Length: 92
Length: 271
Image (cartoon, rainbow over all chains, first blue to last red; front, side, top):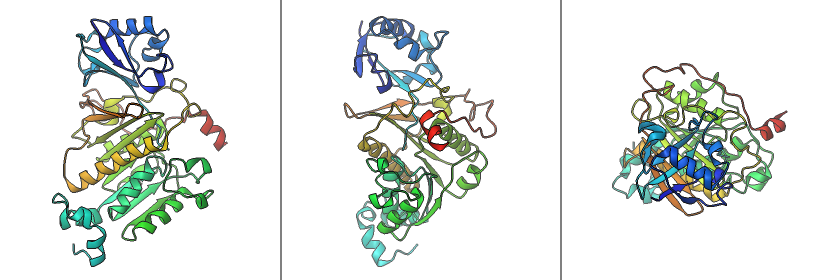
């Protein structure tokens, strides 16, 4: 099972500058664990101490925000595209 | 609204579009747009909106032009270094188009002054550069029911969303709260290519034009995500959140909040 994850610029230091990585997992929770295994440190950037996805970071399965699906229990299937999208504030 | 000869000539390339026409041009000339920030996003947005003949453009910025701004803030010129950005912006925009009345606000937006300013405008463009201002602007626009074009950039990433209060998701539906201080890379670590700001600021100008002209589909209920490194544009869905702290069913944000500024570089400069 292969899921494509789109990684935003601020986290690419942890993915050897890759904007797109392939991982696996039957749901978002497993996907984050697999991400952490391959790119140690990334989970702490995405999740808080309790393991919940941080409030200023959203995770999308294809076009859908997991907050409106089943949060980190949202199931994944082969070929899904997951995007990690943080709030960004720059403008000047 | 009767267009003058020179206006028909000036705006001929957009009047010729069936979706615009003389009637649409009249709407643009009667429109009032507020641009927050005369920087990387505000510059291209203001240039296109003034060129298109928006009747009244308010510009809010409390900074002076610095040499390191000119790489991306295309409203300003080398001779403007040291001048208030709003003055430089006014001269540049009126140099392009005298039809446009530019209202400069050389101030920092706060919970005390924002409502009075935005009430004079039909649509707001957020081109600010920090989370406290972005949440303040979102909340003020939701509470006053003003449409808002939001744009943000960080290194090679850009985002844009259009917020129609009461109809589509607001910025807090997307991200309920600003990140706590220290958890996002500070502005010292960030950098930006001018063209990335240009892409998003131009998308914002286009959203404003579509809104005023009533054409096409706005980026309402969807977030446009631009990546400059692979030149990709993606859209994700942004539903209205019933639990949204400002526009949800039981709002907890009922008055404006001045969040603390947490960019340490900026604080040092202002001290």
